Structure formats: structure tokens, C-alpha cells
Image (cartoon, rainbow, N blue to C red; front, side, top):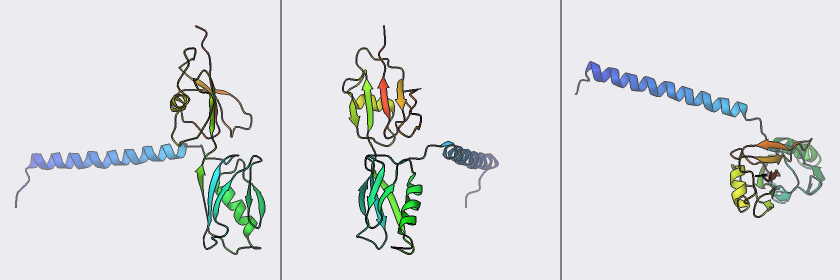
Length: 190
């Protein structure tokens, strides 16, 4: 059996101490990020949903939020989904199904395809493009062929689809794109 010297013991104790407290700091930073994340995805026209109702294969399937913001569902008809979170929509669907059709349905809803984002202005290929989670405005510009030679390359203007005022705001290129965003790249004058 090898005996640890006093110096080695202190070094090991120091490393354990540092590891323990750095883990606590990392956990605290993660909690702060989660608590500050106020963005909760809201459904809108063009979203494609996968709705699973356990033990109800005939009702489970893929559904699309139509142009009016509704989802057409078997038995209950049209259900308003626009501007609802997934949890809010699940609750609304459950209220429509209980007690007339199902007693205690277990429902899982996922977004299969998010509505597209739109980019216009000083990009080479202005158009609508498929949204990908985690995409930045810089990435969106690259997908649209990049900046034209006349573009202001330091920021973009954005209208978020879930903003009731539809107010255009100036945003940095490394901010995250949200589904349905309308992105405008402004022209520079010199």
C-alpha cells in the first residue's frame, strides 16, 4: 500500500475542491440561462405537427396548421392553434376530446416542420426558406446566397411572426432566427 505525502494530499484535495465548485457554478449558470429564456414557441400557419394519442392510432397522425391558424382534427373538427404553445394546444385538444370521445387521453404533440422564414432586401436570392432550429441571421443570409455588394453587413431588420404589433426591430447577425421571421437586409449608401 502506497502512502500519499502531505503535499500530494493537499494537491488532490485542492483539485477536488476546484472541481466541486466549478460544477456548482456551471449548474447555476445553466439554471440562469433556462430561467432567462422567455421565448416559448407559438404555433402558426404552415407548422406541421405530429399528434400522438396513445391507443388511438386512427386519430394519431400528421396535421398542418392551415392559413387561418387552425388544425382540422377527426371527430372534433377545426381547433384554433395560432399563437398557442404546444402545451396550450395540447390542453385545448384534450378539452375537445373529453368526455364525449375519450375519457383520459394521453397526448403528445411535436413540431415536425416549422413554418419558413422570409428574407428580402440586399441578399442574392430573396425568398422563403425552411427554418432550422439554432439558425442565426448570419446563417440565414448565407442560405439566401450571401449579401449583395450594396448590403449593410452589420445588422438586419426583423419582424417576428409572433409579435402582435408586427414591429420591425434591428438585430445583430448572431441572434437566433425564429420560425416565420421576416428578415430585411438594408442597402448601404456608401
